[in-house]
Image (tube, rainbow, N blue to C red):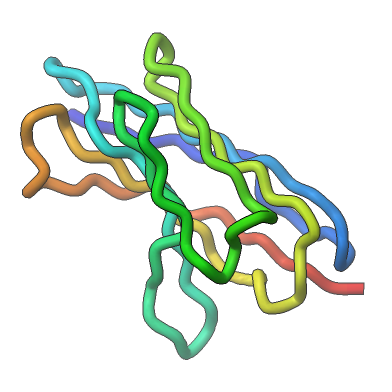
Length: 118
């Protein structure tokens, strides 16, 4: 049974930083693409950043230059470093992971709230 456990959300002032972590477990073949999505109230869920097991990254234009994604393959953990946070970054952030060799399957974390406010 695949599980994704997120941590690191919270309240931060504009211009501040947060680091999200997501530890994945339960896949016999390991994990391929891992990433972060977010959903703000009244909006659709959107991709924030993703990273393959080989380290290739895909960063959304709206966070390019402020956010960075990384992973530790040995720990099946993906990180999202968020700098220069803005109020519009406020959302529930969801971890996403796909089993290796199965890009058609998506697993989701429970979500962690990030609030950027003074």
